[in-house]
Length: 121
Image 1 (cartoon, rainbow, N blue to C red):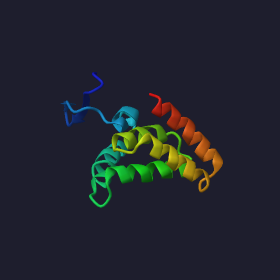
Image 2: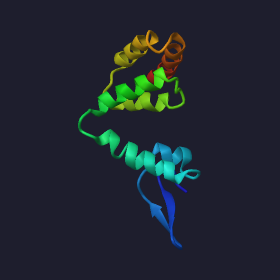
Image 3: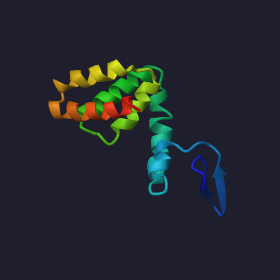
């Protein structure tokens, strides 16, 4: 199957979906379709689209939360998303530096190493 196409079953038939696969579909789509559906439709399809906060602001909040909670597995994807949403390189570095004093030195040091890899891509 092509990476940008995926299939779903509907009754006795198989439906080929021509839309690009989402990161959640790629990561866990074959294992947990319901979690993928909630991720794609509710989290990114609804919550991230609400107008009260810009996507840029949502990215800053999400990156800061992932750093503070030491959720390093999700951090690279959200750092990339933050850059795509208009957060500047220097702003990400400053957020990490700022959080060193609130979430702890180890969380900031891990985050800055992750950010360095992402920002040097």
